[in-house]
Image (tube, rainbow, N blue to C red; front, side, top):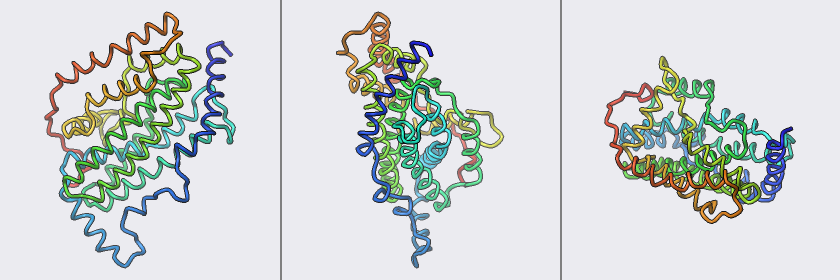
Length: 326
């Protein structure tokens, strides 16, 4: 094992002890946690059919772009098998079933699994969606996998998940707000509780990365710089519809999100700024030359990206998704 790999392994063993100690503050007890059934019409209830009718009436007023974004978010959530297997392949972690990393991965997956279940059932009942086309896209996204530029490096993985959980929190929170404006209070509540989960998970990954910065600041800084140079891609960046090439649908999905203000280029910059502050990069001491160069790049990047973001125009292409029922 190289010195580089051995150092990573030692750091991850240190982080795993912290994970086991803190897991109960990042994840909720299963028996008392919310479940999809808590928000949807109950099939055993005598008012089931009336409840579905009310749900469909409220969903009918959602805008086209909002339905498109909601479907894209749902497919992203349902590609969970990809994310679990990716996190299980991180190098330098114990594969023990009781080790901190594998326990975290299973429990995090268990919480995240409810998101796709809840959104999928809502969309199925809403009457707004061609479910078969959506299901095809979901199967494609899981089968196609993804390449997010992290490799099997735990540092790059934690930077990615810190960023991505913050981004999904923003997206679900904004959809909740827009659904409320369109009169769908149920969908607003659904997206609100999912956003709350994402915020807790973001805190966990940010804290894991903070611990890494404490014990290996130079390599952590270089990993952060590398991820920022590559740009953080969304987990659904290979999204496609039937008959299309990998990733062809993703651009239309992000266009809709940008038009609605659900997730924008400015949000990307603001997440980066939040992580810089959270990890206290500006005041970090004892960096070597490579670490200092990496920090210089990171610190200058938000202003540069913000100037680009402010010049961007909202996309106006009128695209019809196969997922949305005419």
